[in-house]
Length: 331
Image (tube, rainbow, N blue to C red; front, side, top):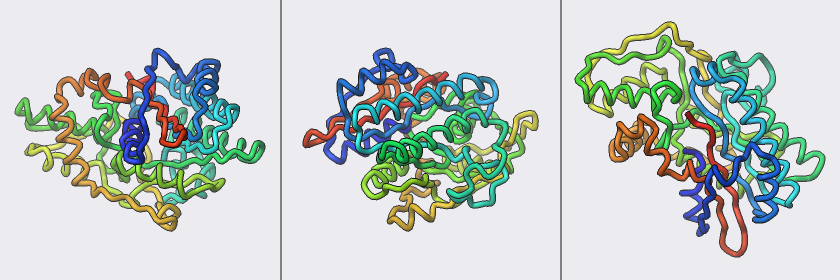
């Protein structure tokens, strides 16, 4: 999802989009990454790749989550330095902040307290990626930067009923309730946790903005600064989809952190703010979901058509090349 959005955004910059499939380049294999980098020698890299999933997936596959994300970050960042990449943007995650960090969370909260246990394996790996950028800047003078997006949603998301994040998971369940005439939809947990949600196209726009305008050591938050409870999100989705029914709660599923909203003041001070209101973004995502074929998207079939499975690499105008690795390892 993220890499495809970055591709769409960079296409507006006149980039020629090239693709390489996962079968041809596994970012977890160091020698393969180094060979590709040496052969193509990109000038800039947007590292959007990683194993991602919701609370259940994180809890069920801790080894996969920490290994895959550590390997991808280490291999791409190290190879980028080795072939002389001039700019690299590493996309982390808001889950790298402590579970009980003061809200809204500033960049300075990183590593000031214990992580949320339900996704700590993923978080540790993403923190390592941020630290790799800082270490390579310190030791080698690399202009590598890091950014932490908040919770993302949009076209190309993973709508799997077990492994998805909250927006696509709820959207798929409410849509199915509408189609099947069900009068209730189950929400995992209590419905009280509060989250900040950002449309993936806004993230892509922020990524291009940061590549142009930021060259600092500290990571930068990317978010809206506005939060909503999971129950309020579900009610907004029900209104968007046109389903009328009740929500039940599943207390056996973890809530995660009670509140997670990013302070986006640094990015705002640089001149960027998100442009997609949540209600509008949800409506656009639902239109994509229905047009793509909800049953196939929910089952993971249509995802193979998107650039997320292809791993696009970008060749910009004037000989400038930008590499935008994609997500790997989705169920």
